[in-house]
Image (cartoon, rainbow, N blue to C red; front, side, top):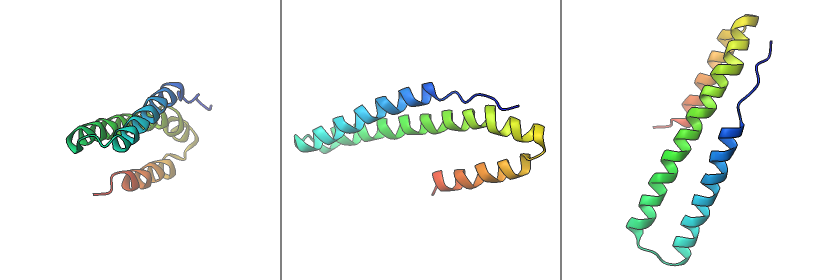
Length: 90
């Protein structure tokens, strides 16, 4: 049984992130102070981490549960571990 992905909230957050990135670009073009820009970049990073969490939860709610039911859990868990190692590069 394939479960539906819940991508609408993720897409909504990505649209907001695009707006924040454009705002930072505008700040740079307007030669705004570095501390202001860094504060905005920190907010973007936090928002991006939030999107990553939602993607992970979506994966757990759909792909991993489906894999458990079909006996492919080990492969899917290895796949998500590899993705995390790329996302959380120290």
